[in-house]
Amino acid sequence: MDNATVYYFVGIKGSGMSALALILHDKGFKVQGSDIKQYTFTQRGLEQAGIKVLDFDEANIHEGLTVIAGNSFTDDHPEIKKARAMGLPVYRYHEFLGHLIEGYTSIGVAGAHGKTSTTGLLSHVLSGVAPTSYLIGDGTGKGTPNARFFVYEADEYRRHFLATKPDYAIMTNIDFDHPDYYTGIDDVYDAFETWSNQVKKGIFAWGDDPELRKLKTDVPVYYYGTNDTDDFQAKNIKRSTTGSTFDVYHDGEDLGNFEIHLYGEHNVLNSLAVIAVAYFEKVDMDEIKHELADFKGVKRRFTERKLADMTIIDDYAHHPSEIKATLDAARQKYPDKEIIAVFQPHTFSRTIALMDDFAKSLNMADKVFLTDIFSSARETQGKVSSKDLAAKIAKGGEILTVDNMSPLLDFHDAVVVFMGAGDVQKYERAYEELLSHLSLKDN
Image 1 (cartoon, rainbow, N blue to C red):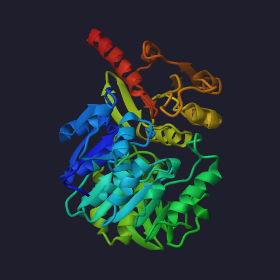
Image 2 (cartoon, one colour; image 1 turned 45 degrees about the horizontal axis):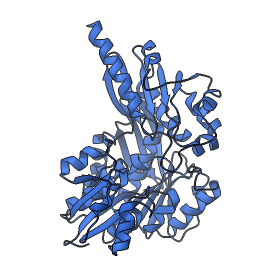
Image 3 (cartoon, rainbow, N blue to C red; image 1 turned 180 degrees about the horizontal axis):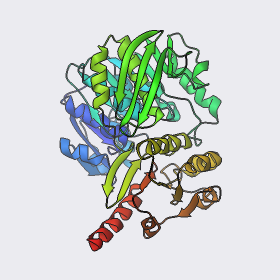
Image 4 (cartoon, rainbow, N blue to C red; image 1 turned 45 degrees about the vertical axis):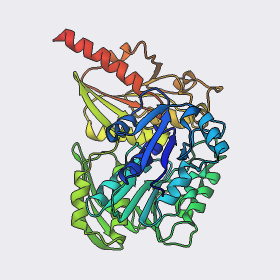
């Protein structure tokens, strides 16, 4: 790390990039970056920290910069290209993160689903008991002076997590995703197994995942779940409209009763992983209980607001397993209300590869609406449309446009869950505006 340089982030509004920028800023380094003009949910944190965000322009690149390049951008990006031509130090996001975690007790959280929620929960809990730096995939990052722990979200996309070598790893699941890169489940497994052999002290893995059960690695693997075959087991799980309580056992030892104000079975499992890490780091269990009960969640994961007589939930879910978990959480908290799903498919390749699974998960809602497929920077077109997915959905499947969200006005005293990893929030805002005008007229 260099106090003389300015750390310049190309694509600073990316969720991981903005978190990393905040960490360096907290540590007292000079930070700025560039990105698109469009407002993003990560932007507020950068603004509050006083970090300058410029428009993309190769004229921004000059001597004295250390460039951190977002993984969404190729080496042909004008700023990255100029930085390399000038001989400036250029790091890819994951490469820089690999260097940054050295010198701490580091915990990487990986998985096809649940890594952001688990990273957020672990960061919150450990921060309550010891100085902790953390990088969460919702754009949240903190660089704490004299930190004992460094908690970070480890991204398996394009095997980026292989740039890091943590002390501990949490693996929430291995599932087939990112079909634009991975050839199938065996390829995903290979990436996770390779990473597992870079972990220094131990791995905490979900016991019900058949792929995780196959892990061959030199460090101990501790499984967590609800079965007697798990090293850390949750028993007597009670789920209610205020959250969940459960007892935790490790190899027959009763670690106590824990309470979380989170919803869905997946959050019980996420909590188990956090408890397991804390146990091996000899953190007092009573402190863990207090911090778990105090956690409110991370950005864009089951984020709620009330408007008129409706409950609106915003969630990042963009894979069938995540949709299932989100709708399960909505059912737990609102067992007596109608659940309406509004889903924006994310990438053409994922929609084609997982079409039947999407339909099955979405049918857990009482009614389903879709938007057009979000075309990412990696994929701008494909041979599939939302209409193809709609044809497989038994509970509806009408396509909504941002100019006409009125079909949602037919529902009252219900829950609308907006899900997607693209710009589904623009549909959410359009609906809220419509609802607000009608509420004013009714009053």
